[in-house]
Length: 74
Image (tube, rainbow, N blue to C red; front, top):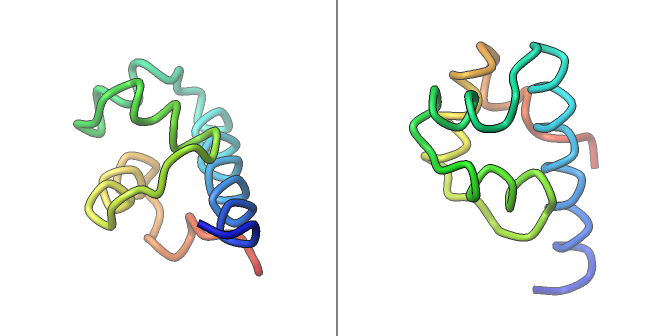
């Protein structure tokens, strides 16, 4: 992964974390509700992994937003 990709994943994770916290969800409960692991959510929110599309769909559904709403502006 190159630097730009790493930076984008960090921005994506940060946006997901901000949206989750704005809804009042803690990480463990939210991960459980979405059907993903807490460690996986932690890795995504900290930009340490490239999440699969289906995982992003689960997160978007858990936040009650569109998939497009997860992505930060370039």
